[in-house]
Image (cartoon, rainbow, N blue to C red; front, side, top):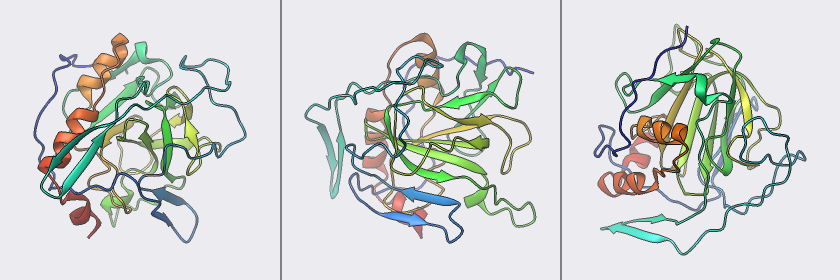
Length: 266
């Protein structure tokens, strides 16, 4: 059953409950689980090579794949407070609702206990989830290792992907049934690139895609990655075709929460 979205205005929501955060926007830090199921990088350079031989798609969801040039990045604006320095690049980064058929998708403006959004699609399981942004893959978990008896928060997302957009923001999607084999660590994706199929892996009671927006942390963690600002104003805007960027709100969140990444990693 399609969950009808609570359509809200695109006004940004300020403030956030998670702990403070310090973020390093440019690092080559990488972690890989022993079983190879999880690979992640906090923030790879925007010039990272395409990891898959398959050409990137255009902005049209479902269009034939073909090479798409990365957006040009202008001189960044800088938000600084104390020792925290956050770059907010002015880019031509593109945004789309992260499902192949956004007209038949729905979401609610709230989420249990922290700021994120669950996206539901008509038909439930098996729909295609796509990249919401032009960027670089910085986390891939291809195996669902969540155990109900243990309920480790780090594995609740099941199969998951995170992308660092060329706008400097991290976009996290979770609960995939399957992840496309072409989605690999360090690979470049365009907005609309298929990532996998909608599912209910991890701690989920129905097929959907969990969507979280956050700054990238330098090390593997889960409490920041899962989401720190409300995504629904941006989803509402992208569904209308408006290219509203969450980068300014993320920069403000980082300035207000300079130690969150280190706390989350600990």
